[in-house]
Image (cartoon, rainbow, N blue to C red; front, top):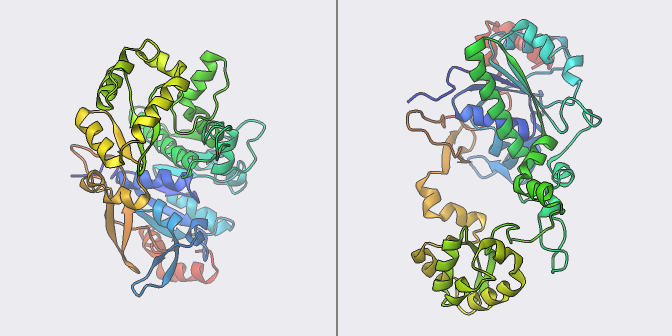
Length: 406
């Protein structure tokens, strides 16, 4: 079955994570993604390690785990955008490109003659997406940003972590670069929406995606808790601020999580733990009352779950239909039968290592396939191939390489 974006060509000028995550999504959906990298060095994430991808004899290659995680499905070409020849090649490549994706500081590509105004004049159907920390406008537009900084500025760390009055209390960042990743998803969504609109109007589009905007949007229910309740949300550890009981519980031999999503599930939980009277208690009968009366409910539940091992409770909760689970480490995630059934881990052929593990795109379609036939590329692996497609001679390619333009 054909991939959904198999007719789309993407010129990816982005580096590090948010932009490459977006272009990897587009590549998974079938787009031909040309990743433009600096000659000799490539994307910064190639050197972010250890760990590094191993070659066939177990030695480190030059490609770090960050790069391997975010560049599947792309073709890599090297090109020095600071040179007039490099800039002209970008303009040539964009003539038949559908999308340009970049995450340079505001104004950088305008100085190089590679901004939306310049490239859309060459190709009016072009979708041009800029990913930045703070957006193209505003008092901080020109400033650099990183995921950690935006997690702090955007309020995420203020609601993540244990309560201040408990051991280990204080702000915490999320264990993955969630703002970068979410920004990549939003960028890909914006690009696909602009492509869809282009089928109707024939016109290109400019997409401005800000990491801070994304993080403010991700505040979701916590933002609305503040806007409607007029109280600043606090860190609550693993406890949900609006729905209870929904948190970590310590059993006799370790922790589990329980997610009670409605009053009917709470009645079932009370039956499972042998305390049906709790569901009849006016203090706990409805979710809003449980949230208000957690200080008296929590010790009761804690004592019950501490009396038995994890396996006992997980089995009983599963049979009763109460959502619950163990807290898996990353190795256990990939051992989970459901994760294995969904083929979320696959191995793709690689020219140096033989094969490379890849955590797959979670999208599944009934009438289309994802494209999963191309491993993260070696630096400049496809430079000659791409330039040949432009009709460039071998002599010209050799000259550009000798002058370190490619």
